[in-house]
Image 1 (cartoon, rainbow, N blue to C red):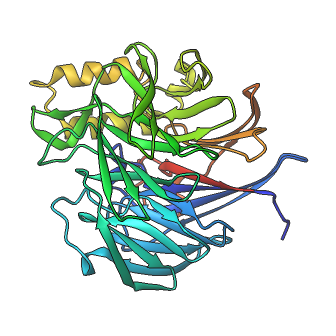
Image 2: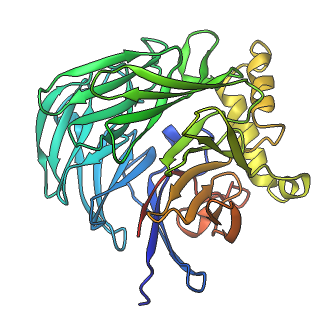
Image 3: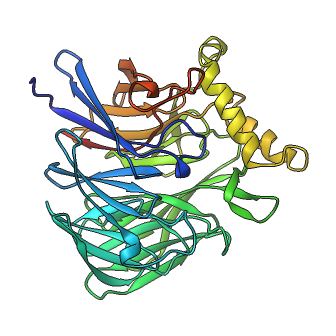
Length: 402
């Protein structure tokens, strides 16, 4: 087989609007910038649900498929073959099915940390049934998980909880003392990115509203201003923050990465990749992946499925404002967009995966010009699907090796 210098791993959750309830799989997209050659491998795993985020061991030999189905799943980093799985209910129960080990932070080529229930646990990938409880995370529903530059701190976001309401917090766990700190914020933040040189991190607001004023499980997108916070991991102090009016297409973010000069995050609802200048933390630019009318007409199955899913989540007669907000947020495209976004180590290539249009794009960074765009195969090639079914694979969070 040909050797490719880059492997773009992407979690897959199927074609539903609510990726927290869908299938669970992994896409590996292989790429060689020398001649733009590429290949891919797609795998879905039976008995696992809610595929959400992939994280890779430092050498890339092992992958962790985070999910909302209360499982741990380890796969081979070269061919996506399943190596081990474990029910997290063996360690701790959850008060909502939205709670899952969605993200992990690797310590070395075998050991990683993830959240289960109210606590963090440390695992050896070769012995998943022997997890070690570390300590409480002290947030409502822990989500994205990163390790700080020094390795001392775990930093993580928090989802709004179906029963306990809006989170408006991030967490910091000290691996030396075993103590967790909760940092209160004016907006909920699901996703974070850690600076590679200093113990600071960035948290991005993820603003939603409960259906009928109470259901934070089947949430609706909120047409409100968005935030980015720069936070010191040692003290928990907010150093700077960025705020954008609701008209800025920065809604429902997913992957967050850093270049030397920019904070970069993709936005599945707003069809964009936003880049904030880190020096002044004010100016921003974006890649716009909003589809035109002709493209939308060519995606009738996906658009139809998305509308149908939206109608199952809320009462269109009593909650019209949520549907109108979603249209404004998506800039009338009626389709979701980029969920995976990863920057190469030399900061020359930006890899993205567009969930709504089912394609993968490689951009030359920082020029942001398209180097390669690949239409990916349909879901029916891998799992049973009705003839009129939505063929999208369901891209979610990504990770890059190379």
